[in-house]
Amino acid sequence: YRVLPRALWPYAQLARWDRPIGWQLLLLPCLWSVALASGAAASAGQFSFGRFLFHCFLFTVGAIAMRGAGCTYNDIVDHDIDMEVARTRSRPLPSGRVSRLQAKVFMVLQALVGLVVLLQFNTFSIVLGILSLAIVAIYPFAKRFTDWPQFFLGLAFSWGALMGWAAEFGTLSLAAVLLYGAAIAWTIGYDTIYAYQDKEDDELIGVRSTARRFGENPRPWLIGLYGIATLLVLLSFVAAGAGAVAYVGLLIAAAMLTYQILVLNIHDPAQCLALFKFNGIVGLIIFAGVVLALLLRLI
Image (cartoon, rainbow, N blue to C red; front, side, top):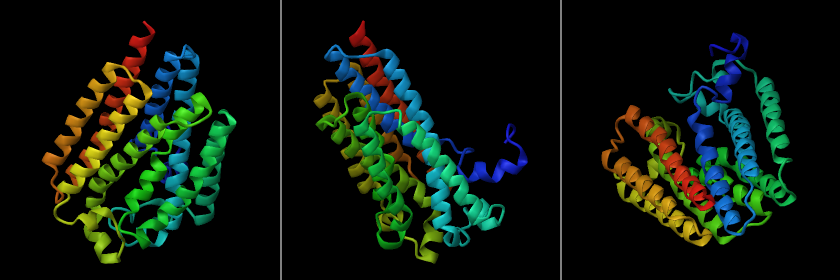
């Protein structure tokens, strides 16, 4: 907000530029996949450090743009619901600081940035990226027809786990599919923790979520979700032939996920938000482990 003119503040809020954890969580599966694919390429003698950095840059720009476009789209769809929830009532659309037309134009502009980024990849990746839009379109409506909207968020937010591998090889593999499944389970877990902030409001207005589904005892569910995520990442590493350091990073990340489950207090919204954000560090630890394993392979 210090850098932007006041007239642009509502648009920054629409895109959640003031809350970078969203695009960071969207970006992390992309980075895992890029690093894992680069390690596999290095084993085959096809690694390019310049290509690795370029892909990381493209996915970062794309994550910021598409997360902003997705949030704007979500706010347009949820305009009426946001007016009924205390935490979202002050957002630009419910508060009237931005019109629906202005929000739609802003969404399209952000999506065009995402398109420019997507067109830098190979044809397979472009088609794969376009396919993800179907899930993105469905997600805002999921809370109206299922107790598992977090699953649809996971499908959309984890797509980068496929994209990073596709960008390197122009195809998919078992390692990428396993990584995608891991990211879905991880997303459901951390977004469930996030959803406990709104559980009471959601019950009043009839919005469904895994927080409502799991009720007062989410720990067994979180153990299952985070356990599945850890196991699938492990199997993905095995399938891709990741180096030993990657497994060390995964072990540290698993300990951090366990910590979240142990300390979680679903009646403390501030703690739920803090634990949700903590997953950004968890994802970075996994990425760092894979990158270190890659660098050691190159030495």
